[in-house]
Amino acid sequence: MDLGRKVQVPDYLSRYYESSIGPFVSLSDLPPEEAVALQEKIRREGEVFASQRKADYLTPRRALEGKVRELFAAGSIT
Image 1 (cartoon, rainbow, N blue to C red):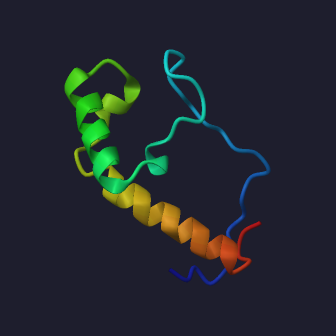
Image 2 (tube, one colour):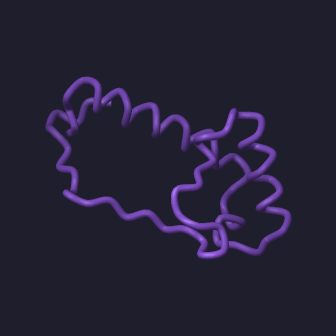
C-alpha cells in the first residue's frame, strides 16, 4: 500500500481494555487457533465490548498488524 506520502503517526498509543481482565492481554499473543476459539467464546458470552466484533475480526486484524510490522521494519514509521 503506497500512499505516496509518509503517514503521520501520533506520539501516543491508546489501548482500551476490560477492567475485569486487565491491560495488555491480547489475542495476538495466542496461536491462531486459540485466538479464534477465544474470540468465538467472547462473542457467544456477549459480556464485554469485544463480543461485538464481527466473526472474521481476526483476519483483518492480523493483516493490519503484519502491515504495521512491515512499515516499522522499513523505517516508514518509528
